[in-house]
Image (tube, rainbow, N blue to C red):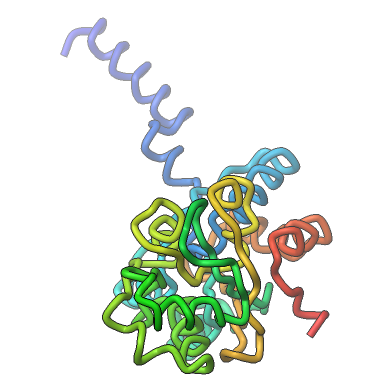
Length: 262
């Protein structure tokens, strides 16, 4: 190698050592796994966190059961916000989290009907019962109860109302509660039972009407978050920010019950 090539190689090495490549920079942004009911609330919180700290997080929304399985299989999530605390506690027992985390909110479910629907936004589900008897409901949306906590809550509420057997063959199942909300507001179904936090978001509220379903019609939706053993500095900071008064105000605005209010 001549002197010119040697000098160029040395300069390149200094550049690489002094400034990490783009892939390394991207890897520093933590990936956060969050239940689908948090789609709007957590996005708002991530924006506030970024403005306050200058740090970024990447949010991925889906079913809590799905994320639970992915984390057990080694997925690189640094923080997990579950809509069912049992998933977070099971991961803690398996040694995949720093500790048992904290309860950050309690969720509510609501009946959502799109504009022009044959259904009324009636939280008692009496109009849904009448519509089923009259044959006015062909399709009705909920999240898949096999792995989505809000789907399980919807199933429990329908059973409490005595409607489960009548409505099963009309159900359109969303992979998560966000997909169920899409079905319930776009004409794919006459309505659906979704997370109140989604129904209250401006984007979804503009598509129809909603009404809360009594919270004693289903098991409480205790929502817990845990830092995984992969968590770094930014994820830890975001975890702390979610517990701040500013974050709690956002959760409350989206219809969540705060843990201290129970």
